Image (cartoon, rainbow, N blue to C red; front, side, top):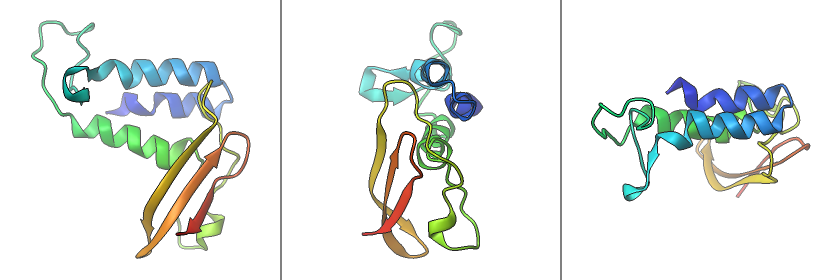
Length: 124
């Protein structure tokens, strides 16, 4: 579950290629072609373990990275516009993250996080 955030930490150092590699190692290698299921164990590291899933903690870590980590968003008591704290750093080859609808303070919002820019949270 913690490994799903490895790519986010690498992106914060500005190392986009390492971020992509660690995102693959820390999350993608836990997924199975069967129903696109996220497993509890990596099959290549623990072949003796059963294919147990879906593993919601790892999926949650991945989603937290997409919504908060890569975009540099830190929710707080202040204005929503002030939540993005740094420019977006995405894994190598990624240009942006877009979320059509998020609920923030009971209001529908959109998230756009383009590499190198500050993320935007706007009313939908």
